[in-house]
Image 1 (cartoon, helix red, strand yellow):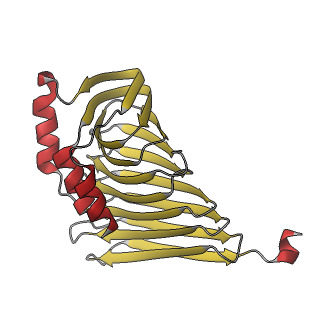
Image 2: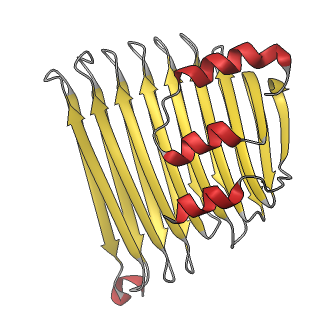
Image 3: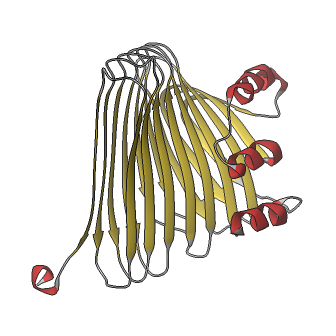
Length: 282
């Protein structure tokens, strides 16, 4: 309900997002005619997993398209109510994106996609370090082709409230995803992360790990899902989520899930939430 109210409120408001891209990338604004065909083909194949994602696709006020074939630094600094769409197309033996999201916006809606081409390897690191009062709502989609790989790292540090949807679609045989999350929450911060690895082709591999520490009266939810399609034989998948609760007022829910339609797979998960007692701290 809160997100619906915010979406209604955010449209029509001015956005002053600053997007800075440096390194081995051909960067274009989505409004540039030269990239319209590529952007349209990407938007056509996206199936929004949430209303917030559909909203961002429809109403983004700032957008970019980047062809990445080396190391690229991306800085997104928001103010006001920002609605941002970003598409990274990764090619070559190693395409690396290091992204920082900062600033003091009232809210940021951010929809980012990473397309990893056949036989390519991508590294994608994102740090959310917004100021304390900001609201951050993100949807992130990774699309992997045959024998492609992506190594993702997410650092969740700032903002008042964070709601994130992260999905990886292993569409090509032999593709791999390795995703790590580090979360530090303090004060009254709230983090809600919904994560999906969808194995759609045979002989794919997935690894997901979350490590979280919570202080003050903060809270976190990590809702992770391994989904294996009927065609995805010989899949190897693992999901783990572990939280340390440092104060009695903190709350953490780690929810691993499996949805498997093929018997010839290996899929496991692990989740813990641990309190540290006074003697152990001493």
